Length: 82
Image (tube, rainbow, N blue to C red; front, top):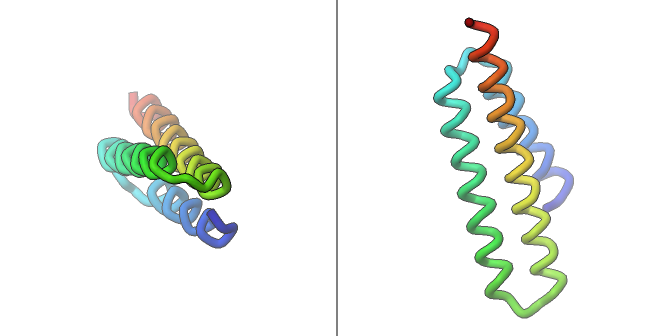
């Protein structure tokens, strides 16, 4: 994943967090990122190039981190309304 692509993902997360999205919407985005991570891992497992496999695993790890960040934010948002 290039730096510009990663920054785009960060902007998506920031937008979801800074706007008035409900926790359910944020969790849906997190599930979407996690599904993309799984797809990247499947692709990596089916390739022969170690370099490409490593890149796709890096993409998957980034998606997973974004999903975790969104889930934490959704939990924080729910707790702040209690």
